Image (cartoon, rainbow, N blue to C red; front, side, top):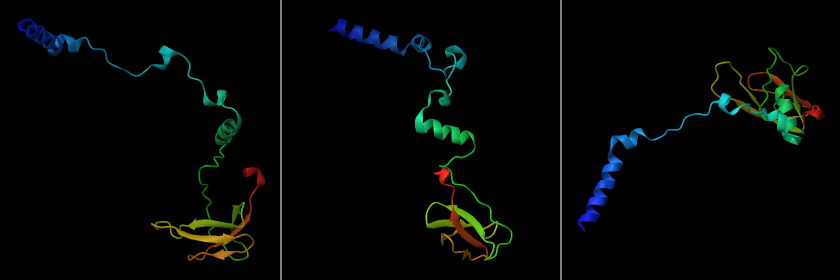
Length: 131
């Protein structure tokens, strides 16, 4: 029994010694120069993914909302045109520059609609290639 107690104590002494801590290895970030070239995602992308990446490089990211700036003065005869693939479209108008909320409204194709701030909006057919 005494021999067993001595062996347990010697094991615990080895674990707690500072030398064991000094010998431990640590993880570090991989250096690209050590492992070589990282491939470009465009090189191995195919199908829809490649089409999406090429469109994003061209500046057309369909998954990001597009911001359309309204004209300084719009009338019922000359409204702000908003492209839409559907008959109805929900738009938001920041009526004042420092406004903290957005006024949302639904507009229909072919029918101009007036916002609370006095600006006019009208939905028009969007380019079918932009789908």
